[in-house]
Image (cartoon, helix red, strand yellow):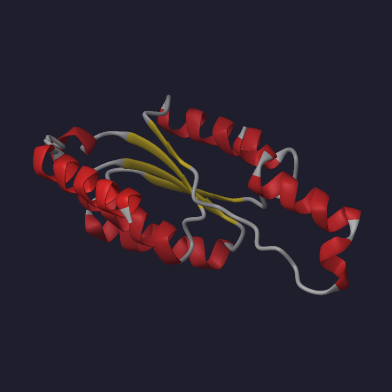
Length: 143
């Protein structure tokens, strides 16, 4: 009970003294690489950065969905939007995606890693191949 009370008081103290000095204008012209941008949180992040005027490189494994997101980002005001379809389960993909972004944008200010691979169900989930795949997508592609 004491731990819960202390945690709550700490959270209230932190919330009261939090100084949010984020300036949305700081993202105007920022060069952003965003993975997992074809749906869900990644898609919404792409639209958010586009509204703020960031230059974008978007990646996901589904090219058709990426093209839709790219079109919407352009409509929302992103000055430059590029995409590259890539599967982060491939060991070569992370490096080629970053190189593509560097070539297209001339550098990177923000790297938003939003891709994740879900664990398969059943007996396949216990196989060495499934474990390697999960490690590649959810760990090695990030480092």
